[in-house]
Image 1 (tube, rainbow, N blue to C red):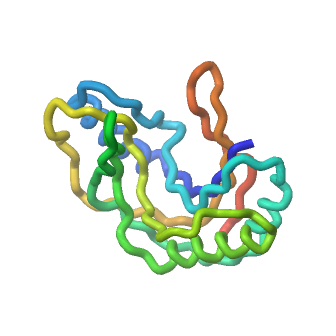
Image 2 (cartoon, rainbow, N blue to C red; image 1 turned 90 degrees about the vertical axis):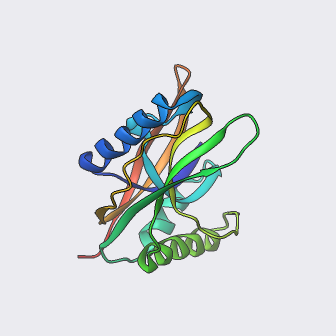
Length: 172
């Protein structure tokens, strides 16, 4: 099973993100665009494993308070064959701490994770080739984070589907 931890979005935030994706589609010749139900902010990518219970235990061991994230400016990771377009998250010590604490809890359970700088972003499209510059709204959006989700990634009917299989609530 392919797993990752993530923050899921409110319907209001998803609406704004789908508007960004629509603007990207209009400006593009081609690309693979994120489906509305798959919009998320990855915390830690775990990868292929059948050790779901160990992941749940690692998630259950962390503690965090609710905090607010700010969705910010759009950006691009350049790739041959098409670029990855994303929406960034403003620097946030609570988000960084959540990432680090989950990383350490998963490593303590024996998971091998990539140890690289955390650059939180929301993928809008992959393999995107533009015809023109997309017209994105750069208005910052905020959302309170009060839970982190364990997500399963699978292909169903040729489509990538992300499904929440567990979650950990913030301490209130």
